[in-house]
Length: 413
Image (tube, rainbow, N blue to C red; front, side, top):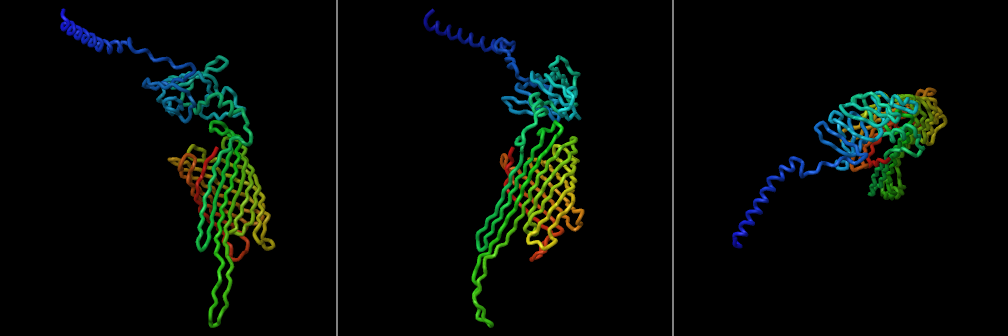
């Protein structure tokens, strides 16, 4: 065999070997010879199996509102309806809350099964620490699955007073410098502390504190009124600077102690100042009852009735205008969560006095918040207050005061 024939033979041999490899490789892969089986999930990892056989590995966070919330390192937090879940394997311990069960510190353990879970075929079994296994619970009968650490901390721990506060702060301003100088500022702080701070436990107490203020000033500069030649002639006259001021603020605090999921008794204080109505300070100290008549994820409505002592002090009051009153407050507070993060709230209060039927007032507060960026939102608000017994003043004091505010709101936790 000469050199040229040897080269041709080597080329054909290599070509044949390559073709054999190309034909055998798919067959080997299909029979499992070339591909290694997938590695089993690491110990302690939860596995979520869908009805179509797909799987997610990660950590079961909780279940609520007919869905499972599952965290995957690849997909983040995923919410999956129960009817899409074939099986869920987890070594974690959970508390199972069936529909209608609102646990408290006094709730028997039998009503809240706790332990590791077997979840398959649209049912859940709980394996307790004592070695027992509960009968299968259909997932449609379950309100919440809560990890055991969270459940124990929320139900057994009474947080300190400075723990658990949430709220918002709002600020707006208008400044004009021209022939007239105008300054207008408005702001509000709203704080709330609900214990416990989760919806799956029976509420124990709630503390709220609110402060809002609106201040404005318009200043006309001083000037010289020129002399006139008459008839009759008048000398030059100095006109002093003139200032018109508005000042309105409101502050209140309330403590609610729940006797059931929706009924509570409360204590409240409130302070109001309204320069436009010659009201120097109105103080209210009272107590009463409240009822959450609507309690839904999208909306709530609370009705309250109080008996109270009320003190009214007026600016430059004449004898007998300041009032010491025994009265009541009947109020309603409505909150509505709208699509795309919009929020509407309304508060209406009627405040009669029983020892002076002429001394009553009515207040209505409306706010509408529009999300802007992360925790920032734009808030529009109106405050309409009616005072039936304002002090006598010149110019005559109007009984009704209305203000519209706009500002930027920051939500904090």
